[in-house]
Image (cartoon, rainbow over all chains, first blue to last red; front, side):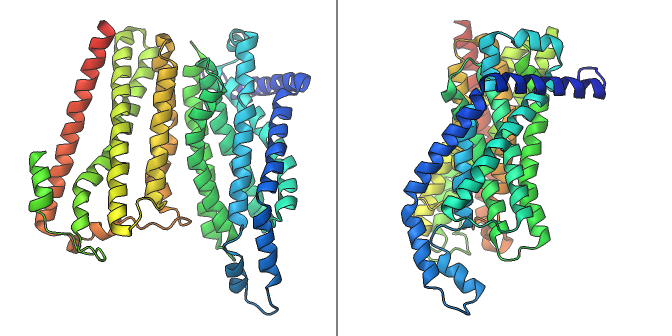
Length: 255
Length: 215
C-alpha cells in the first residue's frame, strides 16, 4: 500500500470513488450507455426467444394435477429453463459491461488527468476507487434490468437469497475483470475492440462458473454444502482477480 | 522422440477399460496428454518470466534483464498457443474415433478452447503494442499474470464442475489395472520427450527473437 496508513488509504479510495461519481453525474455517459445497450439487447432477446416461450406455455398447459415435481421438471427441460435464462441474462450484462466500463480509464487518458491522479493518490487506492465505482454502476444497471428481464421471459425468482448472492457475485467478478482489463486497454491506447478482445476470454471462464452456480441453485432442494461450494466458487474467482489486480495495477498505472 | 513415435504404435499394448474400440484409440494418449499438460505448463513458464519482467522494473539495475525475460515469456506463450492447438486437434481426433463426434462440448473441450482464446488474446495484445516497445513488456506481463486466474480455473476447476458431465477418460487411464507395463514404458518417456522438445523449441525461439531485436 506504498507506505501509507490504512485510514489514509481508505480515504484516498473514497475520494477517487466520489470523484468518479461526480464526473459520471456530470455527463452520465457510462450509465446511459450501459443502460441503453442493455435495454436494446433485452428487447432483441425477447423477440428472438418468442418461440421458446410459446413452447413453454404449451408444456405448462399439458401439465396435469398430481404430477410430481420431477415430471414437471422433465416436461419443461428442453425448453428454456432457469439456467439458460440466467445464462442469457448474464451474456447480456457481460456485453453491456464491456461497452461502458472502459469509460473511467479512457476518459482519464483523453482528458489528460492521469498524471494528476497519479500524484494525489496511491495506485491501489485509484484501483479500489474505480473498481468500487464500476461495481456500483453495474449493480445499478443489473437492478434495473433484471426485474424487466424476469417479467419478459417468465423467469421465476426461486430462493431470493440464492438469487441475490449469485447476482452480487456475478457483478463483483464481472466488474473486477472489466476494471483491470479496461486499465490495461486504455494504457495500450487500444480501441474498444482491444478491450473486449482481452476481457471476454477471461470473462467466459467466469460465465461457466456462474452457470454452474445457477444450475445448482436450480436443482430441487440443493444442499447447503453444494450451494456454498458452487456459489463460493463464483466469489473465489472474483476475489482472485481482485487480489491479483491490486498487485498488478501499479505496474499498469505508473509508466 | 523417435522412440515415442515407434513405441506408441508397436510397443504398447492397447489400454483396457475403453468401450468398443478395444483401446486402440488410446494410443493417441501418448501424444495428447503430454501436449495438453504442456499447454498449461507453457503458461506457467510464461507467467514465471512475466514476474521477472515486473520485478526487474522495480530494481533499476536489472533493466537489461527486463527485455530478455519479456522475450522468454512471449516465446513460452507462443509455444503454449501451438501446443494448445495440438492438444485440441489430438483431443478432437480421439473424440471423433471414440465418441463418434469430433466436437461434443465435453468440459475438457470447452476449457481447452477457452484456453486457446486466452492465449490468442495475449498474442493480440502483443501485436497491438508492437510499435510501443517501451510499454509492451510490462503490459503483456500484467495480462499474462492476470489471466493466470482464469487459466488455473480452466485447467483445475472447469472440468470438474458438476453442471458439466465429462466423458474424458482421465479416471479410466489413471487406474493401474487398465494399462500394461509396456504402455507405461512408452507414456513416461513420451512426457520426457515432449518436455525436452518444448525446452529446445523455447530456446530456439528466444535466440531467434534476440537476433531479430539486434538486427
